[in-house]
Amino acid sequence: MRMMIFAVVLLFAAAAKATTGDYYALVDSAEFYIGAHEWEKAERFIQSALRNEPDNQNTSLLLSNLATVQRYQGKYQEALKNYNVALFMTPNAVTLLKNRASLYLDMDSIDCAYADYGRVLEIDEYDIEALYNRGMLSLDKKLMEESKADFQKIKDISPNSYFAYNGFAIWYKANGNYAKAIENYGVIIKERPSINALANRAECFLELKQLNNAEADIRNALTSDPRNGYLYLLRAKLNKLRFETDAAQRDVKLAQEYGVDDSLVEAFLQ
Image (cartoon, rainbow, N blue to C red):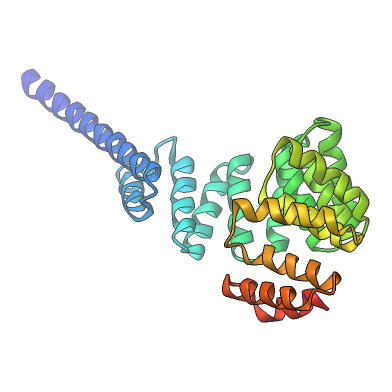
């Protein structure tokens, strides 16, 4: 009888070990496919791992990963459901809150994303990413002073932060202070040059009728991205301000050829 009981215990232990092994094998496979950006396969392996051990201590993390790969596939409602369940289990998980906020942005749920970033900042008031994203959303919501306060908080935390300079550049541009926007974009372009920063600074130069400076930024940006329709639209405005009608019309056609909507062309060139 003692031998039989011992055998049964061994069988149960072996079964438990096999189950655990299966679980980690499934998780490893999911991680592999996440790294390969094969979202559908990653989703299947995560779901299998969750079915294998639904009460595992890593369930909240797995649900978060499941939601993220679903978001990448455009399965927004399924992703939201899994983020919600994961946050119910770990309500103070900052990464989870940020991930759900990103999903809300994909779903154009600005107020919900704003609330999630606010919740992150209740947990950690020094989270620069959350400050920046809430500041940008405040701009979108026309909450100018709230936006400025978030960007200022970033600058207080990290005076040389890219996020502070970029936030203030966009804030000043939105408020018509093009000289201050240019100043901030100048720092960004010196430290971290990008087509977006060059295009935005060029637009500010155009507003101030500093045409040669605008031309230089547009030219530099086009060197890196010659198929960027918005850059041709900027150059069309530059040529219009110089009364070079034929050149402006050629750039408008290029802008449209590279995907700029006709309504944007009309509004921009007024």
